Amino acid sequence: MKDFRPALIAGALLLAGCAGSGHQTATATSETTWWNPISWSWSSLSPWHWFGASLQVTESGVGAVSGATAMEQQAISDGLHGNYRLRQGMRGEDGNIIHFWQALNSDNQPQIEISGDKTVSRIDVTDADIRSESGVKIGTPFSELYSKAFGACRKGSGADADGVECKAPGSAHISYLFSGKWHGPQALIPADETLKSWTVSKIIWRK
Image (cartoon, rainbow, N blue to C red; front, side, top):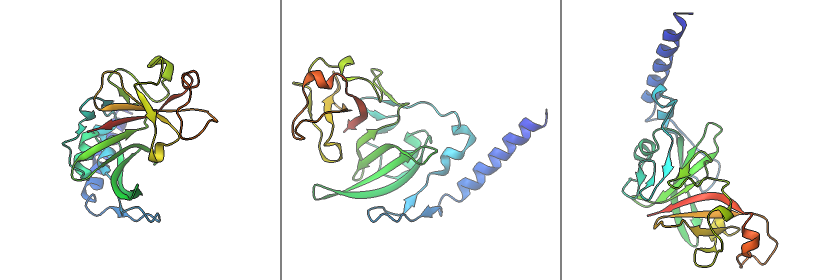
């Protein structure tokens, strides 16, 4: 048993080294028309990232990803502390082409979406383990943050059209998307009494 732990660590280091050496050529092609070839970030396999630091949404961005971060795989992976695998894609939105990187968890589920042109302009967080500076996370009720929607909230747009987006109190860059049950007109914001039971489904940072 005394020899088992050193052997395990040595094996993990060897695996990480082999994965890193294949980083330049490891690509796959998605069947989805809008996806670019998928680029995987292998840095998360390194044993140094098994217990990666937790990320937080701040006025500057998410983790070390900010408005100054280049829309490049290595820069984004480093900014997220190597906690995720990355894949690149694009989609049409309001007549424009949006280029983005998705950060995936171990189940290949998107947890963060980072979009922009040459540098990052927007970050959408759906990872329940990531909080804002004030402690807000996915699942936080509307009633804990707001007494009414007027002056702070607006109807969501695009892919977020079913939700209500509200500026984070005291923030210039962070907003929260709330989702819940409602059967009223799609173009309207639900009444405050209805919103009380809605919860945060996404934390959004904009440059």
